[in-house]
Amino acid sequence: MTAGDRRVEIEYCTQCRWLPRAAWLAQELLTTFEQELTELALRPGTGGVFVVRVGDEVVWDRREQGFPEPTAVKRAVRDRVAPGKPLGHSEK
Figure 1 (cartoon, rainbow, N blue to C red):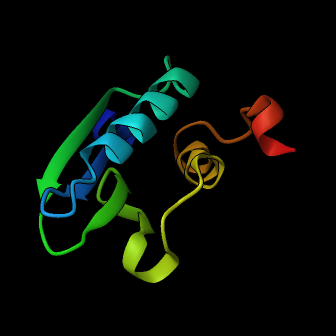
Figure 2: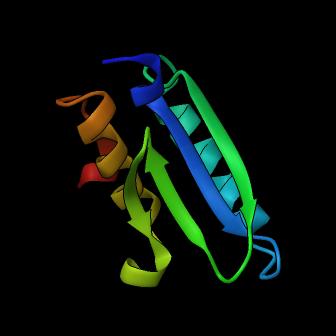
């Protein structure tokens, strides 16, 4: 696994004012994966975008899946950067 495979990007719509939601999700991911992630980027976008990527792979797209619950995104990220890592109370 390369460092790029452990980079998370959250692209959010600036027109929709979704920065607070993106920043909160970023905080949740950084808290959960302090040692596993090499980078977490917030990427401004437009047109209602809210997409989470790990490396080059889209793991959550609001247009297809709706707004994510943090636990769902944590599972998707965990499965790619730290398989087997317990998520504690989030997984119940």
